[in-house]
Length: 195
Image 1 (cartoon, rainbow, N blue to C red):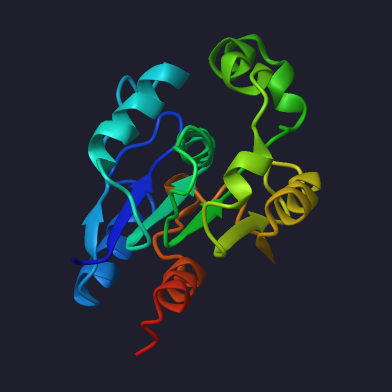
Image 2 (cartoon, one colour; image 1 turned 90 degrees about the vertical axis):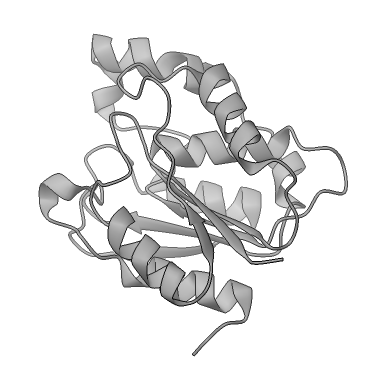
């Protein structure tokens, strides 16, 4: 069975945004089966809807299944993984700008309306930790949304390898970030496919 990668965008995102097309092309060239789905109602992301959508897309997951999340896509993947039956393992996960806490921007009414239901429901880190031995979390040192305290959350609560890049803000296309080689490198390492 081919190794599958699911790349999940964030709030307001879409499959052709930022570095997703580049990553898809690079992974396909390495014979991964790649899915970059448009998530439903991206401007008003419902937690239940997004998690169920991912569940339907993935079907049976196993150690040939990998995930890459950006921003709210990371939350979606975390909550999908915590719902899996005991014993289910995946190949690995790369989180880009993943979060448990947000910056002061969270106090904005529109942000609270959209992200409040996600953040008020705690993540069950212990249930997720055993899903794989390969968690990587990538952050930027000047992300206006995701404070660097999240580095420790992912390291301590998941045992993730954490990487902080310089001046990448929120890793979005609006900043002209169209390639993100560290994600490709880490997926290759996880899959044992260094070429």
